[in-house]
Amino acid sequence: MDLKARKKRKKIEVESIKSSVKEVVKQSSQPEPKFYTHPITIQCNTLLYTTMQNMVKAMHTANDFTYTSVTDVIRAAIKAYQEGMELTELDEKGKKKQTSIRLEEDTYNFYKELPDQMRTKIIERAIRTFLKEKL
Image (cartoon, one colour):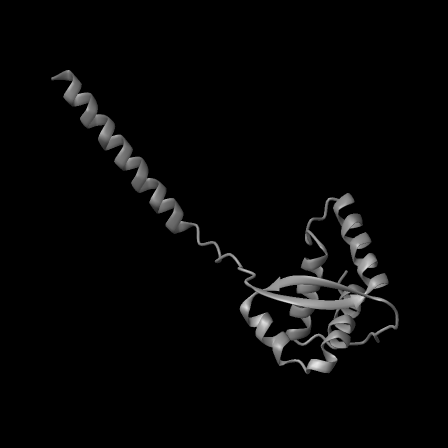
């Protein structure tokens, strides 16, 4: 008889823990995670790419992990341009480095709306402007 009471008490405790966990999960209203599902390939100036790498490394050295990689900086620059950032920097001549990044759906649709022949120049100018103004 004592064994049945222990099992019953254990079952009730487990159920109460599960219900309290569900309540906590419901209460914490975190935004949905961003899924970068749309791949694109861009070209940018080799010197600009190296500058972005150095900036990210310097930020990490200073314990600032806002941007984890160069692709995060590029995503942020495209997003800022999408939200109305005015391009103030010009593109520069030089060798181009090709890199692939993934974008979320709305940013990807914005990227696809850019004129085909001008995408590289626009993205490069957006990155330069973003680096100058935001970082």
